[in-house]
Length: 225
Image 1 (tube, rainbow, N blue to C red):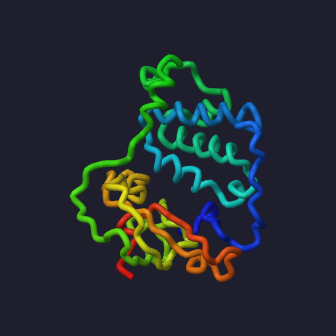
Image 2: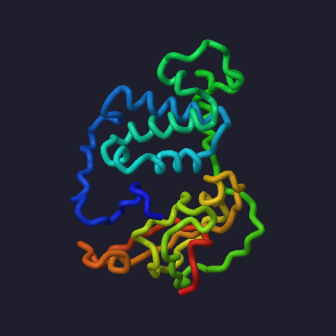
């Protein structure tokens, strides 16, 4: 896909500067609240993780490039809350009424947070889709890297790996397909593979040509090489 968030390996953005090992987990106090509110809102059951990822991707390119990491999170959440009818724009502005939400009983209570987060959100599911590839097999990714179900939709195939040849390292079992799940089309679980790509296959002038990049890719992203 060609949304602004898909910028891995793009020219002109400069090198990545990792934070110091002793850097605080959250640069600002409100960053922690943005993460907590986003996760807690997910427990209302109005969307899944793929829909929430797509909400952040759908931010306007102008906003996406000027927002910090957690500004993207809280902006994507605000869009989802209004789109799904959980809150109104008036609520977000502080002008809403005080009528109790019908979702109030679903709120994540403080005493349940630890257990809920420890449980996580596993995406492995049984599937009737047969495995097409085996460990060691050469495969090539779809080109262009686009959602085949929804025009402009969410996909986990990065554009820098589109049309690239790699080899299957491992089968991870069968998992929910984000391209479907992000758009309310069902979980459509299918096999997912760890695929290794030589750096020279992904970029014209890699700094370390012998490096490999390993991506977890769904079966429908791949064809035999």
